[in-house]
Length: 169
Image (cartoon, helix red, strand yellow):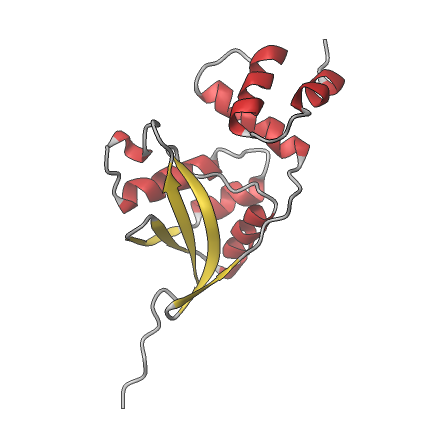
């Protein structure tokens, strides 16, 4: 009698949703799974301020791309835990042109969702925003940083107070 085969054991599933009107990973209109995977790895490897996340991103392997935007990735257990922790802390970066809707551990024909906290570390937000602005060669000023935060972190109406209190002249 043959043993059942586990699909994607020790893997994570990232449920992605395309952002309207934005360039997708790889620049193609219909980005393939490998292009989305490479863009996901690049986005998280750029987080030099979070060396554990950058290292974990470099250890990922592509497992698959399912309909409806589900990216399956595999890595050593410690690296997968770093990704889970980054997701819980809202520090996991999506590939360009996408938003991460959910992350979960993959078991045979099932996924357990990992919940996110309401807390977003200020240092993480500021580093991500400045990194994104540098990547697009946008000059970072108090005003441009505030515009970026309001656009990419909607619902946080106190950004101007935070920026004013932390901005050093």
